[in-house]
Length: 143
Length: 438
Image (cartoon, rainbow over all chains, first blue to last red; front, side, top):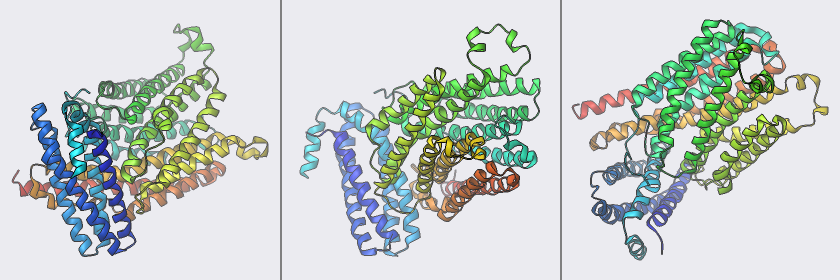
């Protein structure tokens, strides 16, 4: 059985890895590889956000009664990251290397700050308050 | 886990860290001026008044100044909580600390009882309030990161540095020995031993431990690198701190171990950086590599058999080692971090403002627009060249003027990068405000 912090943190690392591969491919102007890796990253990110917004956040809010606290900030940051992903999509389509690398650095910094808040505070808090955390993760794995 | 007081949006207002950052290069420009006007004489001894003024200009005015600003910003991100009443505390600490540093530098150049008392009071208040505000945050167990543990050691080291410094200042006063001090303070601890203690606790304990702890957090995070080996990230800061305590017993052995431990840290830095997955060219990584290389060279030079060194090199050994440690290691890491922090801060503050005004996100420039990569690379090149000129000046003091010019160029450039980032920040902020009719 895997805990919420363990599983969700591992997913962050997987996203970072494929994100870096896409970025390295852009730096080398290998556009087909870049597109491949980037799409893979975007899919993983979307799935991760859906798991949090669709399941983990509502469960946490219900268990703690904190509806306008950390989860609300996380949701708003997700929305901002989606906007950056859209900008990166456009930069990639236009094969604009400098624009892509500037935006990817930005998304990287934003993701890392966001991840740190989740990994160091929110996930451990979820682990404490959600008694069925491991079952939820099993469900995520099966999806 | 204590979640009361936890805030995900506890960033202090941007002008607070920025006033520390902007003051730092200005103090180095002052050091460049002192070097120019002091001529060759200051390179003959570490005890020369100008040398003392310049070392404190660098260590307090640049290194500690930037660290104080950066910690204000890092704590809410890493620990989930910021200092209480940030504006009041940051403003008063910044003012007191800056004036304290200036009066201390002036006191070294023109020794005077009034300047001494003023610098003593200003630095005590400035650092004292800052340490107390930070300690208030650090004693809370908000998160269990290794970085937070290292921060605690670093702040404790700062307290020790500060008290040794006060003792040293007090000793310069006529009548000090009649003040009824405990005998061991006067007899066992010579002024030289205390000065060494003050310098080493400052450079290795305060700044060094802070940099090492921050590196555990930021290198894996921003460069998608593996974490540092647990034995290093969990125990290295504590071991360094404990061994530093030993310097009051046997300074030579303590120093040997401390130097070796920094060699181990440098190797782990190389390994972690080599295994990073994010391979895009990055100026901050260049600075980290320069810092790690310098630590290894420092080790090589420190342990090199003295019989094979020329008399000139032997005479300047302490200054050369200090140049490696301060300029090529500490200042390198700090500049590398600034290249990340400046655009990061500007972006994050604007991004937080747009959390509730999503449509205004379109106005925020990306990180490379706040600080262009090629401009960062220029800073790195200037820094390397200035460092080489510094080593040459130690061996050939007659080229002191070149060092002064290079310091001026390098730190004016840094100031320009800061000015550009903050100007773009305020321009964008205005656009956002207009668009949401604030």
